[in-house]
View: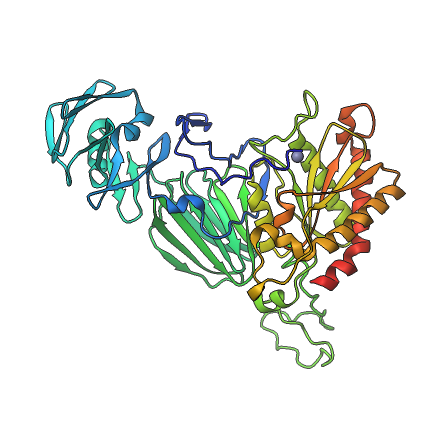
Length: 514
Ligand SMILES: [Zn+2]
């Protein structure tokens, strides 16, 4: 079940390569692989509502990103004498065999068949016997050769014999004319962004705002701001900083991004529950007037007021009743290996989909933290639930041990008022834990009716502790000796039905607390 894994910071990829097959490879030893990996071949449409809170950890670290035709990577930037510097050997490593040696004050670099020379504090460099000036002194530090960042485009251009384009303010270096362009197309249902190459942005949302951060993608734009006359989206803004490009979409309602399978298109649509559960519009008593015909006035009785469309204020005042189903693990994180062929991440996703349809069949809106085999850090799962202001969060796991279902709630004390009403992130659950436990009791009772063996636990679980809503964890175990039974359709369906029933019964209590 692996509740506690991936609780560290969202790892930052340093050297992340795309080879010819689009596979990601990591060359650096000291950094972890970027965890978001999407395999276009296995997805039809990945619907992602990814949320980050506060500032991203990597944003604090100064970096430059280099985009090449086949590789893209970021390098740390360090300051020396008030100037930005990068390590030259690391910058060349992705492109071929590279080595360096120190000879007294000299630093000699060999890249493929090219030789380059630099000298400690020298304001020049030499590539293949050709001397060129540096905008600042060369720095030799612990045998590492550092060059002024502003010289990197020229040095890489020389050594790779390629055209370079440097966006200095955003610290983004493009090699060989590589660039990913995009166009926008307004649709009645939202906005579609079409890219000239597959993209893999990190997406965060807050009400009315959706932000896409591109680190590995050479996304560029010809205009920085695009204002739109669209019922859902008002503007699209492009910016570059710290080796990243950012596209911010401002909307009139909470927004959600959906990726096409080939990851060349992103559809911006209203977040789940916004459009579908909007107050029903009263049906007009007469057929709609044909275009050009005189408007029909006074046929709708005054008592049948047409409710206004949901605005941010009205959504804030009365949150919709939405259940978030969080299929544990996914993508790089397969969870437990339940049998030789059965991975936990597949079981949790299959069950989440069954539970979603059981809930929807009972008129309850359900959203999924993931609806595909994708990696989502554990903190983002809680952040998603909070941003979407869900009523109930259900974390789903599976195990090969035991029988039936284990129901979890956070092990946390019920909230005590804190000065200023500030609720710390790691105890966001405190206000809700009594409701969560009441819900867990209902789940147990309903499972009993379906004759599913069950037990209830409190445990200090991530992300339950971080969710500011009623939150329970459900761990599926096999129904019998055969471990594969944990993934059996009929068995999962019965559990999903019991859970959905419990949520229907528990809804008034949950609503009372919101
Ligand atoms: Zn698990």
